[in-house]
Length: 413
Image (tube, rainbow, N blue to C red; front, side):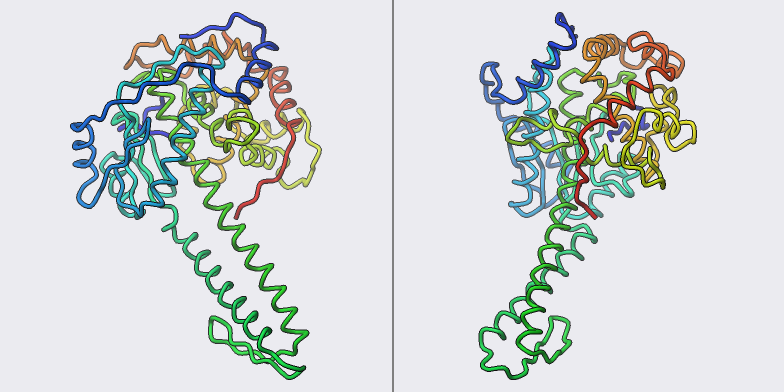
């Protein structure tokens, strides 16, 4: 998701075959970048002063190779954010270098505001006229800044922290009592919440095993929750910011919303030993896509015809609206998740199966004049110019490809 003040949505070519492009893409993303090392960006004291003035009292500046972060969070938290921003920047430029996009590199660092509390983030968003409720971050196209808040202070995550602390205290108490217990006499256990329980040694050992499992489960929930936010928010918004500043999208231009969001969704997957995130399948988006296709049927084996049926049943927006009407991306909740899953799936499909056509489509969009309005009919016409009609044959190829992707149910709350 990204924003402009009025919530308006956001040159390269291929000379080889689609198969060759896919092969090159897979290999290049798994190995080191071959381009020359970048020169360090100069320190811009005026830029830093202006960013601190925008952030307000109590903020400090952190410089990374490509970002300038104004923050009032603990140092460890901003260091974690900075590492994720740099990973995303690297992934985006590996992607544009590999597929042959003639991307530019900004002459100064990209700006980020990082608030410790959600309330601070929402107050800042209100100044931008961005409805921040239910969001965790935003790239604002008009100011060319991203803003986030410390997810560790999110109420749901804080509740998990409290549960984990209680579980650890209970586990420590059980270990202490068992190690001090002599013979087979009763053992009195006092829990973190004040409850007391009398146990035999056998019962205490069973409680210990249960407590260990509970702690592991709670810690997994915490990791999955914060990890999903980091990937689907921080990496997503940072990808917007880098893509706009690299010239893949045109600031102030009529960039089709579906491709702006679809490309950002590609960078939500975490980097791995096999390569950068772009090479991976976005399991969260695939989960939402498959859920919308299957609905309540419980079917595990899903095919192209199931995708067509889901569209006709209204579980997805019409493909024509997806590629032509930016308003479909204003949805929140499960409806919003389904829209984003659909646009991720389309972008992923086109990247893997129609890369030359996708290149031509993006090139033509990049030539639009900033400020020129584009109608939904024009957007649909441009899409079909490069990819053909959005008919049942196209939908079968798209849905069939996505539903055959290896699916691994992701963890989370």
